[in-house]
Image 1: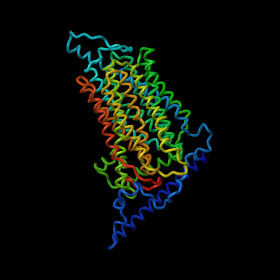
Image 2: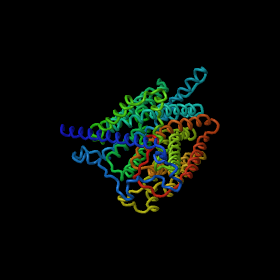
Image 3: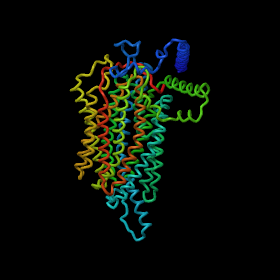
Image 4: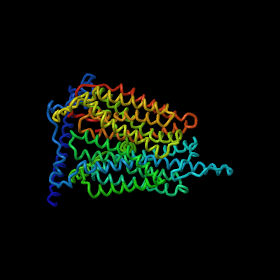
Length: 586
């Protein structure tokens, strides 16, 4: 082990020396350019970093790096060589993580409806207690916290209160997650994926502990303490960060050519878990008559996940890569603190800018073009709208079905199971079948040129968004539970838009910018997670008394806007996968 550590340290020193030499060479080159520019008669345009004038709408969206040959193969993927000498049980693999992730996805899906129904009962009790204080002669049927019908809670005032509570829970959790997720994600680059996964799980356990207290002592539990649970959940990244770190683990131990397939597996695991979880939770509540049992089971799942990750799953980042990442981070911090100019409050604000990663969606400099920026911008806009509507409508649909049709945990769980099962079927069967029929057999792995966002991609996105629009129009017209479920199944077809949008976005950038791009879209998703539920829950709270379908009209209109925006994205010619596009954020 000592010789191995010595070799790692030697490699790190060599990497550091090479980095210092490269920085010195760049500074020397920049000094020569500045000296030449200062001479009379020398055109400054030949040294411009941003040569957008040389790129027009007819040029490729991404230019080829000059030293790349048209058909040169990409550099070999060497991650697996770092673990080749280890026994099988110490080598990282997606098969270590996919089963635990599926289990947590089932728990995550199963807890959605019980949480909403518990919040409904707590808000209902609080409303009637306050009503009795204002009117001593007022009497009410006590709220049954053991799976009762609670028809007295099906009034606009209670529905509005539930919607506002869910709004604040979503806002607090989303804001906390947006602030902590980028830092925790960067932490995983320096200290490994496992530690961040464990931290995230402990945060979710802390949140569920508060819900266990609420379900155990509902008569005396102050409902506003649930806001604390939302903050705890958000500060540790919540389930969304856990999914991102799982994807990072998969990327660490999967060659780039196969990552799209592996990500599709995790995507299917997520929606399958969300489909199975609600119906399982519904049967558990129906059999036991107690919502608290579901929260105890979820907490147990998290403890099992933590134990398995800590004791059995090999770390996907080698010690060498972790130490290199730490040294680069420390070097960057030290350089900024000691060698850089003194910072003022403006520099401090810039350093704290949470939207810095979004610059990757607006590239400038050699190889970029107006067409590239247009496609990246509008594809990201459609992707964010689709995610935001999905987040904003989840709670509203459950609350609406309880108000209009008297659905309990069992019926709501069955609805979510049907809708998410339809989405999984579309992802695993319909989308691959259509792709095979249109594009034929997959290209050979040696042909690694990107074809960009083509007409087929755009057709899939537009058709999917259109089906989402139809589904939400169906929600607004549904006057029975069966029609509402049918509309949900139609909207589920729109689930094929998300992977197609993500794939289309990555086709516009070189492979070494994929992580930066997905980080930017994750930031947009975090913002949408805050804004969309706040807006749509606020609409539902303000209109449920007079016209409860108003929120679905707004949701359908939002999807209609996304459908319109998708027509601003234009297909283009082939793009070479290995390019050198310097982003504005460099």
